Length: 188
Image (cartoon, rainbow, N blue to C red):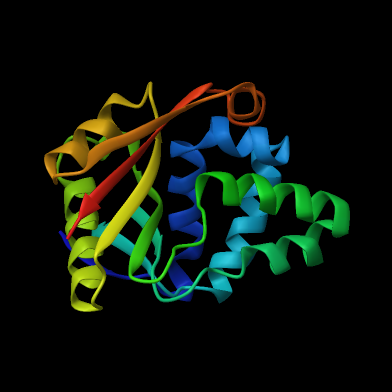
């Protein structure tokens, strides 16, 4: 298995994994996972920076992080959905994937095929993210993860991430289907 940068030709397979892994959250943001699938296919066909895929004959993992720059998802969503719906969707995405501060990185997501979970795919993607941020001079990596995502919490903890705080509010429950989220951080 190898981890490499996302290429434009990978977008459809990669986005399929994203939708499978985060259908609850995407349904909360867009109200329709098929709409989310098409929007993210268009987006990741053009924006491949700081995105990784894991492949073993086919793509089995997809990850995105923000370090040097933030993906221009807000402008894209306003253009595709119109101003009001686009701003709402981009604000919801920013809630879980905030803009990184100088010297810090944010993991936007790590999505692994349900058939390949617990087989090291997520670890390989996370190792590559940590390596890239460290090589770029980053000092810290943050990630939001739902309290009920035991696999995600376990993966991050295995690599030294610690729970910094817990968000517990109705806004997250209404929009993402889960009321409680951990902010996890790794000091490099």
